[in-house]
Length: 409
Image 1 (cartoon, helix red, strand yellow):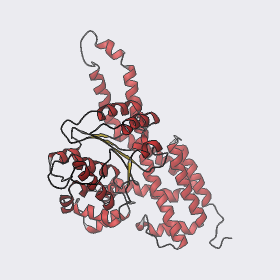
Image 2 (image 1 turned 90 degrees about the vertical axis):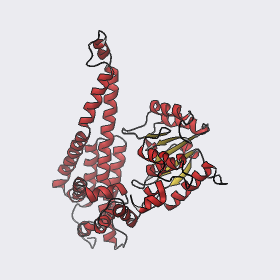
Image 3 (image 1 turned 45 degrees about the vertical axis):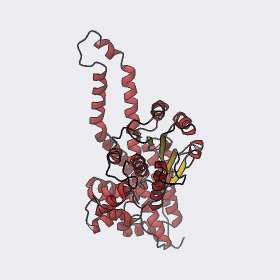
Image 4 (image 1 turned 30 degrees about the horizontal axis):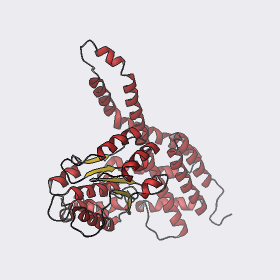
């Protein structure tokens, strides 16, 4: 364990979030009664870009609230801190959706838990990760407990932004908002060096191409598959510029995503189905066993629907990583074309960014970025991946369509 984590307790897991850390420490002290301030409230909203540590901040705060140390809350050493961070504390519930949404049924179950008094800890803490996936019904169910909170319950919500498309305005208005920022390259590198034992050069390079995402920096530094995925994403920037390669590249990307998703979940699906059948009496020899299984079609359909939703979410997440890399490549090319000195998203691809800049105008590169963003939006609106990608590469191809000359002729 790095000295930073030891000195800062659980908050040592936060990267580049000094102001947020100070706010959470003050609130935890206030909640304990060690502070005369009124920093503590019953509902919190953590927002920030991917990789900034929204859920980490929420979990660290949960640990600080439960901490039994006589010193600073969130010591990281007591039983309450270690079990909270490990996800095994009896009074800390984490909702981590693996599908497209958080249903009203699931949220009502959580609301029932939230109404109980804590059993072993100081607080009943509910952490909702990806709260932007709450359905309208689920948000309304949660709103009731946020508006009339039980005495010892704290709700911690995590979402990308406070935009109405990400978070119910009414629900947002009942929460104290903490905005996390993108960690700096150096702060990410120090984490990889101190916690993961990576060589400084390796750590700094991975941090520089991670887009400010701590977890991705770690994967890029240690995982060949992650590096291959990134290379594939960046190749698409060039393949999409040519009509002869654009649509085939888009088709291959979809096939790759579908194959990876299948690999991820095949064993999980089989295990889930087997566990459901066993719970319904599968394998039994009693008189009612056959009838029970025949009547289980509805439950099996429900399981299949959840699995399909999880598959769709995974495919979208995999595609989104590619699109973010792709947008970054066109952004670097645009910076090069305009002579900007801004930090590159892909500093190891400077020559290729220069090549892209020489093949179209700044307006064309802007059109490429807009096409990528439009693809992300289309996927969010349930457009099929292949159709969304085909539309994207068509728009990108138009930006590179000759004739073009740097003089504008």
